[in-house]
Length: 347
Image (tube, rainbow, N blue to C red; front, top):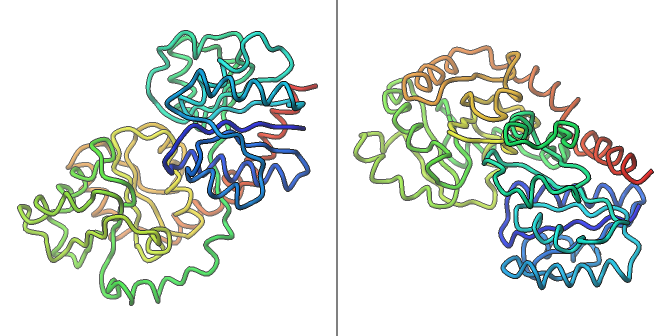
């Protein structure tokens, strides 16, 4: 098959990473994959280096970007156009107006309501892909037909974690004698950083440490000081080696108020780091059946989950999560499903 991936994002995100992984794996299987993306964006830099042919678009100019893609489609025989992110979705629809040959697949990986009739009830869309059942449920509640939506979980390349050494990481970052809880994610209201700090506040007497990694997490320094837990909290801000540091955690915490299907949990599963998460979005799909510790999105419930983690059977949780990940969350498994969806459309 000939496939055009449309990626409108100019910044790196979990969704961008999924598109990159999909494209590389599809090409390995013999498909011809083209990329439409923003020049010098993370997707551009990675995939240009990998030798993919790239069509340059501008996320702020959907109509002109659509014209560029439309011109490309007229010169190339493309079977599947797969759009990623909201602006990419719009660009793809504009580009395919009155064109019947290409099948349009739209990625949906967020829990926000699908209120734009043109974008979500448009008959030109052949298939939606939701990255969790929770995302599909939101779409159905906003009148997208169930038959048009397939759930394909996000995934990762598990081999990237093979050389991560837990002991050396813990020694380097002075985790060695602590029970380390960690959060990995850029600071925002819905990610639950403030909630986690409040829930953690009474745990410092248990030899516990909280590590915060992500852009703008340094903004939490004042709250840490006010709570009197400065000696138990390590704020590392943005780190390129965030995944490697996560290997040194005793528990990853995902205290979000809204989350479709967190990539960081998938990575933790393969690194054999157990996870605490709130009962929102797609998190229960990952952590149910004793694959992690689930809690409500409030201070008391999260505090109790942290206490439970201190005495939990970590090995049992790790084994359950790792087995689930190997069966459901490898990039091979994901692209098996993606490839079948594509082929069913073009037959």
